[in-house]
Amino acid sequence: MKPKLTGSRHVLAVKNLQVSADFYCRQLGFESLWTDGFWHFVRRGAITLMLGECADEMPAGDTGDHSYFGYFEVEGIDLLYREYREKGIAFLSHLEDKPWGQREFTLQTPDGHRIAFGEQIP
Image (cartoon, rainbow, N blue to C red):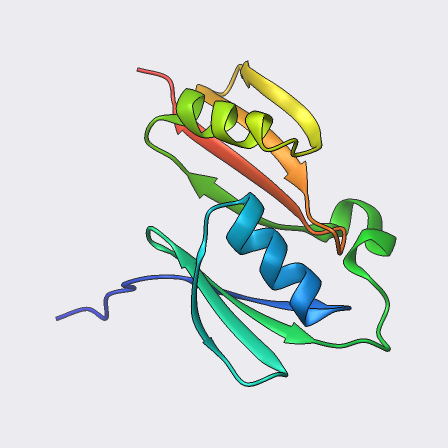
């Protein structure tokens, strides 16, 4: 029997835990799972993020292209894009079909983390 990878959690350093948790929960539709004042775990669907406050560290946005941390697979990407657009999310790239067979868009969090969302084009 081979070991099986069963999920993914992303650990993110954030400057202000409350600001970041509010962004993920209020703007991106994640639910709060747990917090202790230094960490805040949030989830939407199969995606769990573990936000840890690192107020004195360089923000992710200062790392340029290295600030990408996730590509989230989506079912119903047009609906998700519309949901985020209606909430006033600032996009780095708008929803479009890509030559590699994905329909995708990209956004940036208050800390400068970049997230791409994509759905395979049938």
